[in-house]
Length: 420
Image 1 (tube, rainbow, N blue to C red):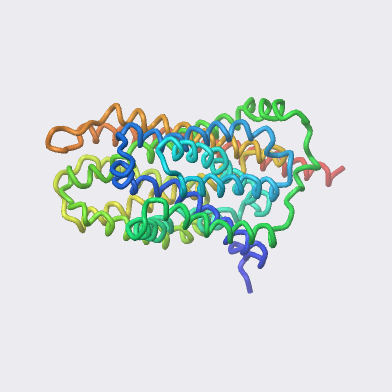
Image 2 (cartoon, helix red, strand yellow; image 1 turned 180 degrees about the horizontal axis):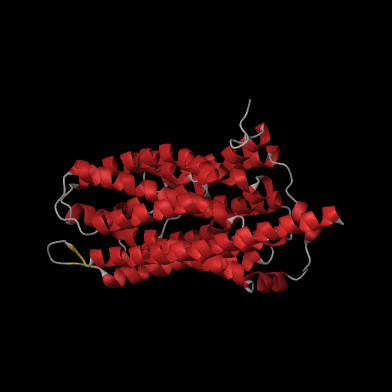
């Protein structure tokens, strides 16, 4: 007999989880694969690091702006049609990256990819919120968020292998190939998701957008997302350089660190998702945050460190980060009203993209590489990230309080209707 605290999924729900996880894999891999290709692109295109940085940031900035503009329309259409539209644009942008012969065309292709790809995550989260009740969303997020770990374990090595065999265009064309199968599966098997259309109260996209960003409970969630995005974007761009130059790990060992860390995240994701539903989303977020704070402060202050210890610290740190991602994502899905879900998710995704881009820029102004290659002021970044995590705990507590109050009000409303 199935236990009530362990809800099962129907066959169709399992398909939705799987296809959204694979879809997220293509989106994440498209974003992540550019960074390890930097050495090839800098040489072949004869560009500066600043120009390469612009290629990377162009995606995030265009994604953030696109998400805000799309938010007003997000609840006006069937979510399946909206997903297919933006995924088509993403595939086109990625294909243009795969055939770009020059720097300027690559930059333009990244902007196109960001405009469409940056909105897909918010549409996916809106679909999850529409199709899965709150008590199941932790488990769903646990599987969907595995896309980050899978892209690190499988996608990046395969992409780099193809780049070494052919050239840097190959990884993008590989993503296009996988994306075609995902598009076909969504087109054929996903059912229309349009129940939200019957409860729309505003007809103007601008009015819908304005209404969404004016609600205090939504603003608290957006503020929490801003801080949640800050940590990773501040530390990640300089993580490899810090590991090699400060911790004394030879560059050839970096893939081993990423591989083991990714495998740990893959195994931990579904378990953390299950725990999120069983013991509470806020509790898991608090655990993940406290664990992450301790390890960030430890890691950023390390000197020469043995490889095995670096692997252990990174693996445990990613358990904390994964706990924060899954629990906060599941919790945030409960914030918007059904009529606002698409707009809320779009703005929330844009906030994450834009704040992450700003955080990377600020981090670049704080740290610098001295003549010996040593990364200076990295502990300062660790302290800033730790403080942001503490404030994020408080903000998520307020978000959780709003959700509990809304649930209690709904129970009281239903009770009064029964009495009447």
